[in-house]
Image 1: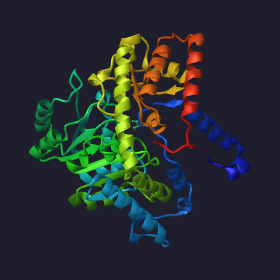
Image 2 (image 1 turned 90 degrees about the vertical axis):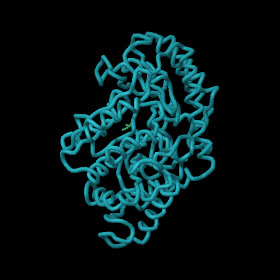
Image 3 (image 1 turned 90 degrees about the horizontal axis):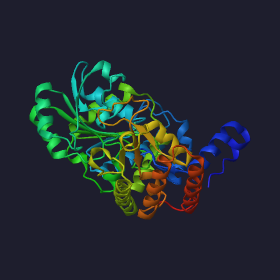
Image 4 (image 1 turned 180 degrees about the vertical axis):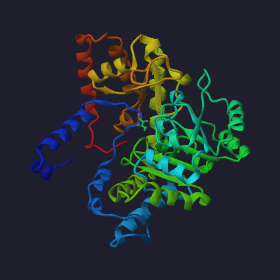
Length: 418
Ligand code: DSN
């Protein structure tokens, strides 16, 4: 599908990497929970002349001339985002999820303010104030944790909130596999007078596809990436209630960012248009169904699943307690048969973050390829085989051949996505 005529001529070395990555994606099963395959139309928008244009400011009030088309395309992206999520206001300029969160903090907090967010090992995200991040040097982050059965105890969360008096009550996650009760969560925020924010990066596509409840109906501010389940270009976005709109826009630009990437904004507009179509609802439903089938199959193979299973697109497996191998070893074994996952910390992990006890597995990308229940059961069987192989090449090699054969039946960028 991609011709690459010029880059092939001009820069052979870079072209080799592009071709290598294309082959890797074609011949392997992408099961990193945060990854997906953007459509050809999204990719085409990324490779347009909008990449040449500086557009500091917002539609109708820019700092540079020549904005008649950037204004149109950014307005389309904004209007589609608002429609997709039922939001009062959308800022489509954040360069990534981390930048969106940084801008939201800048809009809502002053240095020294307290934020109550989910502990990283319990499913939270680095940008929710992990000590190694820059926001953690500016604001005071306090953590809530999940219970042994994987749920959040909202009574305990309420008590912690009353004690710590956060200015911002933060929901959202990167490896938590259960639903959050938005009503209970935001009621706590209201009671203590905190602003409520949800980072829905992982589940934005499932929300857009109406497979999961919509946090925009409950939270003051909602941040997201646009490339995970939402299947757009790599980037971020902030949705908020009207009273926060001005502060959010000011915090994104000129607060923490300069010129927006207009080619990415054009691609966001295309992706939001795709997500508004009925076929995207089907996709979101299939993602949830595939995750449930994979969960069942993993249980049948005797895997220990964290948080008591899954209610979204991802599953966290404790490979250390199940098989006596680390997350890193599991990631390498699966890589060797062409299944890409990531090692992941688990609640109160006894091992280090660089070689933790778990792996995180997601189905958004394989679902985009058109795979369904039958394929999920095969994948679980192959993963089980690889993880128990002790690195034996005579077991791994045939499994890799099976993975490649399956991928051939679900080609990338040739047929239309599900
Ligand atoms: N890297 C993303 C993830 O994998 O969840 C979030 O930053």
